[in-house]
Length: 65
Image: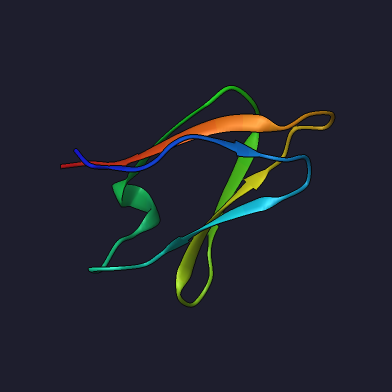
C-alpha cells in the first residue's frame, strides 16, 4: 500500500487532482477523510472534490495492493 497524499487539506468547494499514472483507477484508491467528498474521473486525473457544506476537509489517499 502506497500513500499518494498524506493529511492534505482540501478547502471548501475545491478539488484535489491525482494523475492517472500506471493504469491507476478509482477502484484502486483508499480514501480516508473527515468530511464529505465526491470522487470522479476525468481524462488524465482522478478528482477528489470537497463536498462538505461548510468547511475544508483533511484527506489521506492510499493505493490498494
